[in-house]
Length: 273
Ligand SMILES: Nc1ncnc2c1ncn2[C@@H]1O[C@H](COP(=O)(O)OP(=O)(O)O)[C@@H](O)[C@H]1O
Ligand SMILES: [Mg+2]
Image (tube, rainbow, N blue to C red):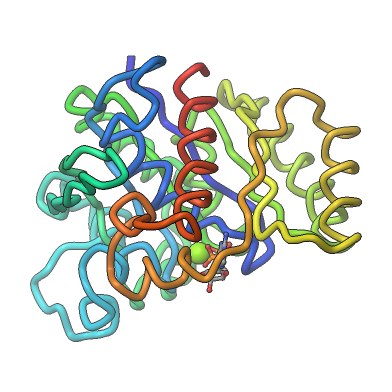
């Protein structure tokens, strides 16, 4: 059975894209071999900001005219088969750190997806479009990871309805903890329609501040053992994005490896299910 996992949180900048990219890449590479070997993974970008697409294709792709190139927009709005839009990405080996090469499939996004809310207005069962599209390709994958936009609109709703599980990345601070309440209500609403389970919460952008520690404690009180390993705030994580790759390709020395190891820890939890 394919596991479909939405990475969602309606607030921006909580690490959704970073977690989607690195968890998808980590599963594809098999970075937690004691639990699970290399997996067939599809990363789905349903954010009009298309940051995950910019990492693995190019920023130009996400903004350019891309005429005739199918993206999530065409899949959702025109019901173009997902297969026509999917691109295969090569993840280079990082022999020094012991991470194997792999390939990862990507269903890319484009800035024009920002119109989806309007373009789908009046469409019956518009919230089911992603679920039906993914059903047709699911047999080709062990995992489908969906990177959601920072809102609870029609795109996130499509992702939650397509998914069986959800991961919530949370950055340090008081506001994110408020945001979780609203997201939990949405999860409960969607769980009435399909079988959506909370897989885990990822504390992201963790540093040595009191705020980070308090957020972590707050999350542990709210979610207990569903709190996944914390991801440290590291410049290497940003640099990997800028170098258009995942953290596993980028981790070369002690200063960059701990972020990769933290993501490998998350991949292990995801693999355990
Ligand atoms: N662990 C981290 N260390 C350093 N920077 C990070 C880390 N995680 C995310 N970032 C940066 O924080 C910003 C927001 O992260 P992003 O994953 O894009 O969040 P979202 O998708 O929720 O908006 C990005 O610039 C990203 O590069
Ligand atoms: Mg994002």
